[in-house]
Amino acid sequence: MLRHALRPCVLVLLVLIGAGPALGQRLYWVDTAGGSIQSLLPDGTGLETHVVGGQPSDIAIDGGGGKMYWTDDGFNEIRRADLDGTSIESVVSGAGNLVRALALDPTAGKVYWTDAGILRRANLDGTSVQVVLTDGVAMSGVALDVAAGKVYYTRNDTAEIKRANLDGSVKEVVVSGASNAQEIALDLAAGKVYWSEPGSVPLAMPGAVKRANLDGTGVETLASGFAIGLTIDPAGGRVYWGENGPAASIHAADLDGSNATTLIATGVILPVGCDFAAVVPEPFPGTGEDLRLGVGINSPPSFGGAAQEISASGGDLVALRLDSPGGTLASPVAAPPFIIADLIATGTDPIENTFFPGVWIPGDGSEWIVLFDAYSQAGGLGVAVLPAGGLNLTIQLPPVVSGLKVAIQGFAAYPVAANGLFAASSATTIELL
Image 1 (cartoon, rainbow, N blue to C red):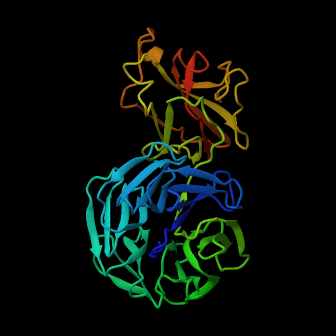
Image 2: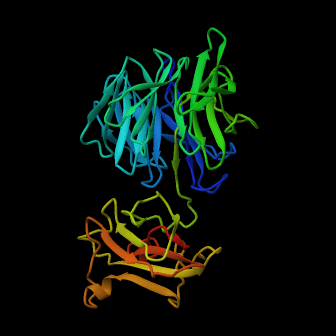
Image 3: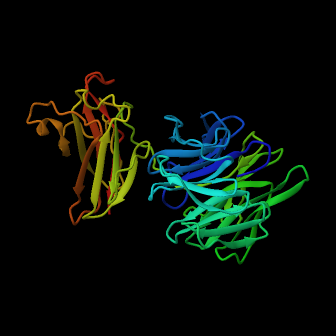
């Protein structure tokens, strides 16, 4: 995150799990001066703008939870929204005096952020704020190695990249001479740390994009320029960074710096910062009403913000959660819920119902697998309603399953729905490996 007087813009890359560019990938950044978050596809097309207000300064994505988090150094708080920029809410108010860099640990349900020379963390809902460590006066970037129990951060007052245990103990210098290092990213599989050095535009002194081994050896310069933020896509073999200066822009290259290209001229002065996270594709949207289906494989259900494509194996536990976030289809509203699955061949996608757009389950019921039926649960009276806290269901896949996909979709019988009969969630497909 840049610490100049000019207002920064921060990039974040959301990447679908898998090698190379894929449906659902988007590169996100914040425009502090414009109070917005923008995104585009990794090839530089598909620009979108989400106005969030305030002075956003860094961003991190919880792809599985369908949320983007950002620091606002005007209000000194951490905020979040759905991936389309809606449902904005404050997570941590009074998060510090100079709230900037941000990192997430969705598995542990934690958010980390820097406040000048203090690293803090809290639960994703903003509770249990803690000081992790204090070190100097200027932390500019933060990245997590959760498996090793480490946090990496930049100190641009001492030109160092440092790391410590997640409890704040055992601080050590990883890289010295990292001039005004800003954002950092970790390629744990390759044992590399990447960082950006912005240089100085007024002094016409370009910076660089660099990387080194996790022990600080083997420092390499990958690109020169007024580099600000960066992120990496290890699976796709790409590094992305922002360029400061008169020709502010966003760039991409292979992880070794080769095959560099300019994705877009941002039109803002400082495209700063980056992150990396997984996001799900959006091929099977529902009817657009207040109903969503979360799915988890051997884990609690998560909501990807739209439809999901995931994989599972025989014997896995599939956790489902059907809810109405806005409460319009939940108790005491009489909208009996249903969860229905359909078997389809691997390599194919569900086919949208001709008569009911947003429905991906065959209309004749010939291949239905009814996972939950409100009418049966209510003794055939059809009076069961969706609980205010959501409907939770866990099923176990047969020991031997392969060569198939299961499409799952939630419904709520609701005559006020747009089609006059029911609301439908987005559909999730599970590939059986």
